[in-house]
Length: 169
Image (cartoon, rainbow, N blue to C red; front, side):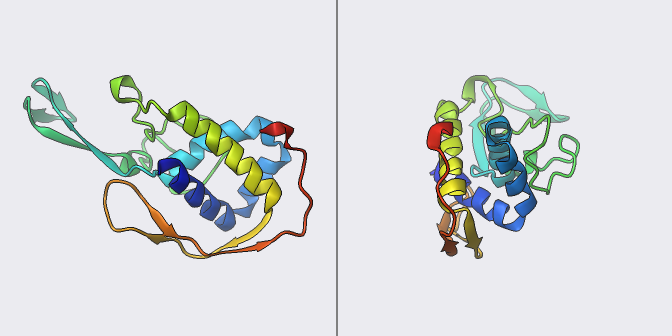
């Protein structure tokens, strides 16, 4: 679900920021992996996750007791203006993209992160080359606060251009 939703959210972002699409396609091979990191940061498909403290600790000046629940808001962390310059902008040329979209590292890092990155690379190439002229409407989201689920995404496709060589995938 997270890769599917990241794909939908990045498609919306490219529609709203055509300069970013042009930038990516000017050198797809060199720019796709940093772009994938921005897809995850900007889209933040996992919005929050709860963990249980195993030991007493302090977090941001707050005392946490073993057994307390701590909620991690990925969507907030990925828009933290102390970490990201212009955090509300979709910018696939970000040099240091320290997003927390796959769990931020450590023992809870997403086991599927490598597969997700690979899928996003392949899906983006196919979308950009198979349907380069796509207009996107407003996404409809499922109610909830765990995963940002796109349930509907109206699109209009113009397949005027020819498919490029698929050796990039």
